[in-house]
Amino acid sequence: MIDVKLLQNNFEKVSSLLIRKKVDGNLLENLKLKLSATKIKRQEMESSQALQNSLSSQFGAYKKEGKDTVILKEDIDALKEKRTLLEIEVQNEEKELESILLAIPNLPNEDVPCGASEDENIILEKILVPKEFTFTPKEHWEIGENLGIIDFERGVKLAKSRFSALSGIGARLERALINYFLDFNRERGFSEWYVPFMANTNTLIGTGQLPKFEEDLFKIEGEDLYLIPTAEVQLTNLFNDEILTQEQLPILLTSYTPCFRKEAGSAGRDTRGMIRQHQFDKVELVAITKPEQSSEIFHKMVECASDLLTSLELPHQKVQLCTGDLGFGAAVTIDLEVWLPGQGKYREISSISNTNDFQARRAKIRYKDGKNNILCHTLNGSSLAVGRTLVAILENYQQADGTIKIPDVLKKYM
View 1 (tube, one colour):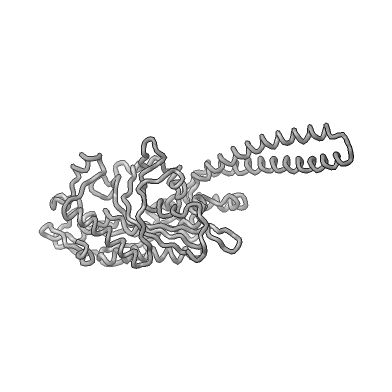
View 2: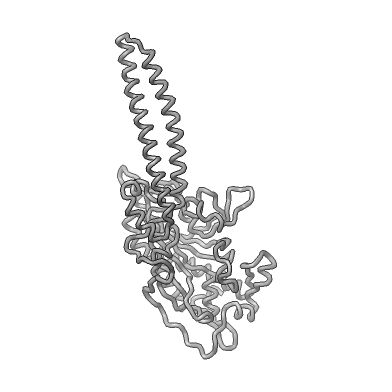
C-alpha cells in the first residue's frame, strides 16, 4: 500500500508516477478528494477534542472557585457528544480511504523505463544461443502426446479445460525439476519451506492479491480460504504483523507449491498446451530485506533464476519491464524469457520483482532499528515455473526421432 503521508505531501508527483502504470485518472481524483475529506474531518475532531479539554480544565477551576458550572457542563457534554459522532465519521472516512488505497498499485521506481505496454519492454541480455535443428521442431503438446507423457483429454475429463495430466517420464520429469530447483536455490542461500496451499483473506491482502484480483482466485465455499496463486503469498506473510531484528535480515526463502489461477483475463490466449493453465507447479524465491539491501538482493534473485536456466542449457533473455507492463505490486521487474523453438519465440518463464515497502506496509512487516520500527522491503520471483520449464525442455531437447534427451543436471534426479 502507498504511504499516505507521501500522498498528502506530494500528491502531484505520486500521481505522475501512478499514471505511468496506467492508473485511471478518475481513481486518482477520487483518492485526492477522499484524502482531503479525511484530513478535514480529522482536524474537526481534533479541534473539538482540544476545545473539550480546554473547557474541562475550566470546569476544574470553576469548581475550586465555587463558580456555577451548570452551563459549562452542558457545553462539555455537548462537545463530548459531538466528538463521539466525529470519531465515527473519521473512522468511516478512513475505512473508505483504505478501500481506495488497497486498489492503488505500487509506485514504479523512477529509473524504470516509461512505456505503455509489453511492446516497449527492453531486452537487457541474451544468454546462450538457440540450437539449430536439422528438422522442423515440434511444439510441446505434439511432442508430449506422441510420447504419451502429457494427456490433455484426461485432464479436461478430470477437471475442465486448461488442466492436464502427466504420466510416466512426464510425471517424473516434473518431480525432478521441482527437486532440482529447490536444491539449486538452497545452495544459493535460500532457506526451504513447505507451506499451506490455501490462504486466508488477511494473507492475500498482505501481498496485494485482494481485494483487486479476487476474480482470478479460486475461493473455498463457506470458508475464509482461497487456493493460493503463488507461494509468494505464503512466504512473504510468514512475517505478517511481525517486528524483526536487523540481524535477521535479509531473509531468503524458497518453496515449491502448486499455483491455482482462474486466468480470468486470458480468454483465447494459449488455449493449447501447458503454457497457461489453471493449476501449475512453481518454485518461488522470496526475500525480506532492509531498504538499503533490496536492490542488491533483487539482482541476486535475477541471477539465481538465470543461472538455473543456464544450468539446464536453455537459451533465455532478461527483459526489463516498462512502467505500463509492471504488475500491481511491483516497483521494478525483470522477466526471464526462455526460447521455445517449436513456437519460434521467447516466452516468460520467470518474473522477479522488488515491491519496496508496498507489501510490507499492507502486511505490517517491520524491523527494529534502535527505537524505531522500519518497514522492510519484500521481493519475489519464480525460480522457476515448473510446467513451462518442462515445455522448454521438450522443445529444446527434442530429437529427430521424436524422443527427448534429458539435461545432464537432471539425470541423477530421474
